[in-house]
Amino acid sequence: MVIEKVGVVGCGLMGAGITQTAAQAGYKVVVAEANQEVLDKGLKNIRGLLERAVAKGRTSKEEMEGILSKIEGTTDLAQLKDCQLVIEAVVEDMAVKKKVFKTLDKSCPKETILATNTSSLTVAETAAITLRPDRVVGLHFFNPVPVMKLVEVVRTIATSDETFNAAYEFARSLGKEPIGVKDSCGFVVNLLLIPYLLSAIRALEQGVASIEGIDKGMKLGCGYPMGPFTLLDFVGLDTTYHIAGIMFEEFKERHYAPPPLLKRLYLMGHLGRKSGRGFYDYSTDPPKVVSFS
Ligand code: 3HC
Image 1 (cartoon, rainbow, N blue to C red):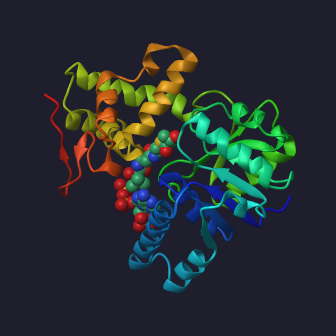
Image 2: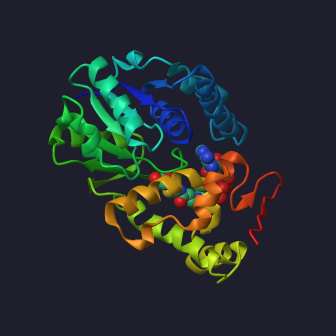
C-alpha cells in the first residue's frame, strides 16, 4: 500500500501538528474541520509556526510555501475520499469519534486505512463500528507534534499485519520513532504520565510545595524539560481531565481519578495555555503562577 495523500480530521493542537508534520515529510494533506472559522485558525497556526522556522533560519521561505501548498483545508469529510490514510484527531469524546468514523467508513474506499489519534479511548470501539476493523489502527502523536519524536502505533485485536506495518512505516517516514503498543487504555505514555501529573496536583492540594516548587523539583531533580504544572497547562487541562476520567472509568484505580482542583479549573474554563490561564496566568511574559488560596 503506497500512501501519497493523507487526510486529517481536526485542525486543533494535534490535528494541525499532524498536518504540518505530514506536509513537511512530503505528503499531500487534506485537513477537515467542522467549520471554516476553526479551520482558518488551525491553518493560521501552521503558517505561524513555519514563519517562526523561517525567521530562525531553519527553513527557507520557498520551502515554507512548498509545505503550505501541500495542505488543503475543507469542511466536508467527503473530500478525504482519495486519501490512502485518514487520521482522526478530534476531541477525546467517543461519541464524536464514532460519528467521524462512521462517516469516513461510508465515504472512503474500503482500502483506506482509518487511524485515530486517541490518547486513552479504546481503538477497538471505533474500529467495531466500521465495516473495515482490520484497517483501523491507532496513531498516537505527542504535543508539539512537529518536535516530539514518539508515535505510539496501536494494534487492536482486529488490526491486520498489513495495516499495522503501513501505519508503523508511515510514522517512520515522518521522521518519528514509532513503538507498537496494545490497545490498552493510555497505551504506554499516558499510563505512566497521567498518574504523575495528577499526583502533582494532589501534592499541591496537600500543601507539599508550591506550583513553582513542584515544577522546579521535577525539572531540576529529574531533568524533565517542563515541570508537571507547566506540562499540564501545555497539554490542556480539559484534555488531561478527559483522559483521567476515561482511565479511571477503565481501571477504577484512585490514582487515575481527576483531583478536585483539576475538575474546578476545567469547569471554570481555565484550560492552561490555550485559554490563557491554568496553573499559570499567560497574560504576562513570563507567565505568573496562579494562587488558589
Ligand atoms: N510547535 C512546533 N514547534 C515547537 C513548538 C510548537 N508548539 N514549541 C516549540 N517548538 C520548537 C521550537 O521552534 C524549537 O525549535 P528549534 O530548536 O529548531 O528552533 C524547539 O521546539 C525548542 O523550543 P524552545 O526553544 O522554544 O523551547 P524548549 O527548548 O523549552 O522546548 C518543548 C519546548 C519542545 C515543548 C519542550 O519544553 C518539551 O519537550 N516539553 C515537554 C513536552 C511534552 O512532554 N510533550 C508530551 C505531552 S503528552 C502528550 O502530548 C500526550 C497526550 O495524549 C496528552
